[in-house]
Length: 388
Image (spheres, rainbow, N blue to C red):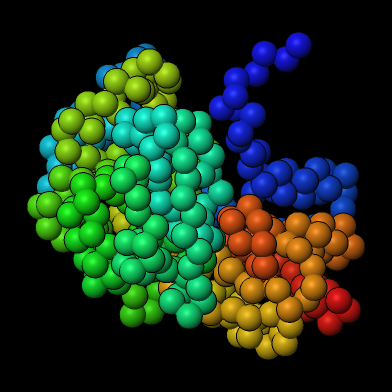
């Protein structure tokens, strides 16, 4: 008899990781695969960050740290939040975690009890509903539309609420759509949340990757009342190309921060010690690297947008953040999993099925790759659309 917990049996595996692993396995066999499924920058971590981590090892920073992270890093995050986000948090209100994914999970575990409802706009990042289920909560999915830029409206939020609603998850800039909420949109949602005393989980991991006239706004910065109910999540994976370092953080009012720290103290103890020194260097070093990275992505974003708009069988709106397009493929007569299976097996192009994000009539395409891979991958995707 398999003694697996009921919570685990309710959780689905990550389709994004499954597709990425399948593409890597095909490459390992010598097949040419055009990977448009990735969720990480293709360039390496900057040398000055790597050097700081190496120096930390040589200096003997290889032991346990405080569960919330080394004080110097938490102070640097506090300074960053004040300058970049107009958020005031003391170091003891910040918890450094083993990735922003863990930061999200810790935040959910700290707030959600059995039967609590958590409102999640779709298309959503694949792990949000599963994290809620693991915490014993109930994900309540709010379907967004192209016409609203793949963003949940305040009216939708209010309609989805029940007496059991405990939390709402906002992801701006968003994965998989690249949607960026405006200040006014966040104010309207925040006012409802504060009136109903609903906790806001604000996942801002893509905040540095915003294009055109769009601006990133941290919802907790808009009023003291919003701050009191918001757990802000961020990290180093996307902007600093540090996905494998597994470093994220939460910034939250002290009672939430203490709960998150308690969870961490009984799970991973602390984020990797020497990696934290790399993160400290990332925050204190020359930030021009990020401007260069964003500029490169913007070129690829515009290139991909022009190519996708020219394909008659799909619809796409311009994403203003992150490094993804979410393409509507409902007119092709294929469910997203079937479409992505055919695209990978026959045309050697890896994309992520929309069903992973709660929307089965679309697929996610990433432009965090080289222009050569992007161009050939889109050539093949266009051919696939013509032939199907």
